[in-house]
Image (tube, rainbow over all chains, first blue to last red):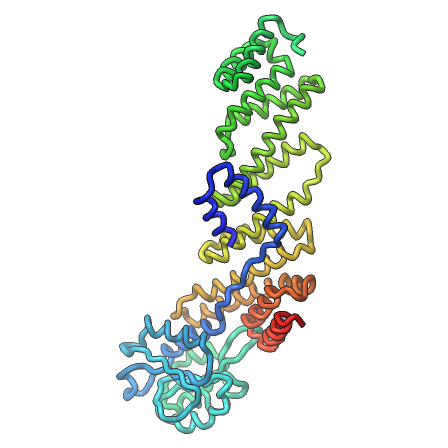
Length: 191
Length: 281
């Protein structure tokens, strides 16, 4: 906050005192070992939000799901991700559909989302979710090793410190979704 | 001391002295300019010393201006005076004026740094400060003062960058200055830490400033670049952790860096170390 100090001093101090203070500030910086600060911004959450928004552009949902709000249900706890998705929903739409972000602690099978994102802490719900949402036009996304072969159409993975995603076309088709070959080229295809 | 010049020139230089004593700088300038019409005066080292002093006084009004014709005239007069092999008293007088000019340049470099946020001018003023100070004290070792100055530049620009992420050039200036500090003092904890912070925050900025509708191919490029920056940040922060294992800010930063690198295991490891350090373990 050095700069703020200088700004305040400039407003409050007359010239000779200001000059002296700035001179002392140099010494002060060295003596006190001035330390900056890390931004506590969650980069992973922002990246995931960008991925999720992109997914809305690569899939075609059944006609029955092209009216009303476009629902993204996040199951599990990730406050930073929820914040990013809420921000996204305020400014973006999927076609003419308004986005609605829903966060639940567990998967109860009652809701009919367009996207269901099962966070790692609820990954055990994957088989239940994939059977209950079969053919209902829900893109199931997970973040757990092997999830793309266990019913999720998309599974986030870490490769060389970066977020990537696996894609199971079979799971997407079973869910009643259509997609292009372009999308497969951007993913790590598992089938 | 004025033996080299004729009686009339002595009178002219005495007029200069009287004006200086009366603190009438316009009168002194007029007198010194008039005296220097004479070739005899121009051959006298002490006359040049007077001229240097008068123009030093005139240059005071330019104390925060790096380009001052009066200051240049003063400095040039000192150079000529010294070339004329003056008596020891004049040499000391010249040194005294040079020292004052060096101080002016130092004050200027600080002013350009903190007030005008102009690193180019600040570093130029600092260079001039060093140049003239070394003429006064030829044996002076600038290492500590260089560390002091570049630490101030690095910390200040790191601070500016962290508070205004759109100004990427602030981060770059901060990095260059802090690298200079580490060249001079490889174990400087503050410079090492601040370098790590700049790299990390540059990586964060890339992601933070990305639009939500960034296409997937572009997202991959952004992730590549931000990951590189996080990895560049890591050795600096690890070094701070080695030098000062209980440094809470370093532990917190390492937790954040590993999180940004999607290395949950290491992030949790540093989270635990941070919690332990906070408890005093």
